[in-house]
Image 1 (cartoon, rainbow, N blue to C red):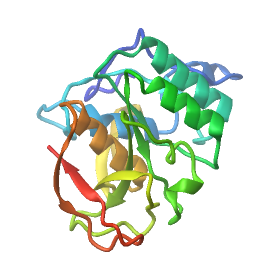
Image 2 (cartoon, one colour):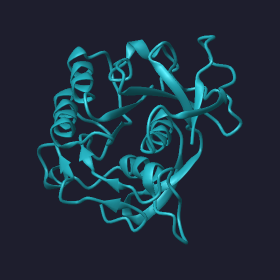
Image 3 (cartoon, rainbow, N blue to C red):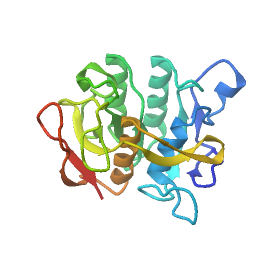
Image 4 (cartoon, rainbow, N blue to C red):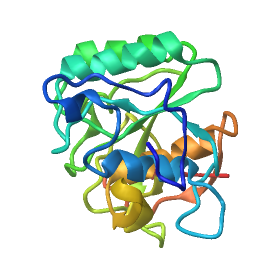
Length: 224
């Protein structure tokens, strides 16, 4: 929450974990969430990384513990919090996923009435229809696959009809817990690129299509 490269609304940040004191804090104990936040909105200053929408306000809604694990009920509680506290034009990024859960899908669909939701397609090299919330669909919901810096499909990325756009997700440098920086890969890294773009408005611009999309229907590359 106190990373110098991030503009965080600490007062509205919240944790839906239970148990130990570290779980009750909205502060990221894993690094993954901090990385995602930096890709969206790291400040454009003289050090570190720069987000797609530099300096945009970040509200941390923590639903995963230091191992990156959490419950479906906790994730749904986080989605409901966004629905209750978000405003039109806000963007919620969900760089997480699991097996099929109609309850989670329905929560995202309901919450997207006002808030834009951006969902990671997942990293199983599988059809995104087999994963929630990636398979959730609606006019304010965007599921994002991953590519590398050469616009080639990321081998780990999920695919299929739920995917709306592709974005960079390989070897992404961004903020990390403890005030540091790290380079990691995943559709979790692609989704916040799209979230940053969508903060500038919808519909987003595109720049060609990704190469070698395994479902044969090349995803459009989201861009500023």
